Length: 266
Image (cartoon, rainbow, N blue to C red):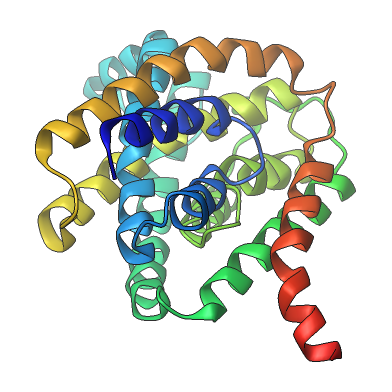
């Protein structure tokens, strides 16, 4: 993969990371189908690219992050105030998503070269679209968080390691289902991604590695995904309630599955 392709992929990652359409699934499609990139490394690189967008999330939500770290000296496990609730939510969701994510990621690497992998992406995108279409929200905020919500949201985030399952789509959909306001759901979803993505990148870089890219190329990829992610995050939060992203997810998912459905029919 040349430098121009890396920059294109990184910019696309930064733009679509915040959209509930599975940035990982779409980035893997772009790398493997358009740029003919090894699908196993495409899976790994799609996770590394999230490091750029998580840096942009850290910058955008810097006040909340500072409050969480400042809260640790007086932290008590529970939900007695807003920052305490957010801290407890981060701890439980990170633990549960890490356990689920590592188990699923190891399984995905074993089937990464199979046709079934593309089918998984297509089904995942369709599921994401169906979930988004069916959800309505209410007015709860972070002070209404509970252990159940924190753990289940974390588990759902872990399932987003499956390409096609949108991390932001599935976590915000669950929070909306639990009657949290759209702004609270988006804020929680984006903030909870920070420790999960950092741990995922640590796992990939230390234990798996990416054979086809040099470190300088990884740095460039992370830099461009960070810049484009920072530019696009505020815009997405403003338009999130006006655009029907579930339609896009289902269209892409159906397009991926069409060749295999035609083979079955014929």
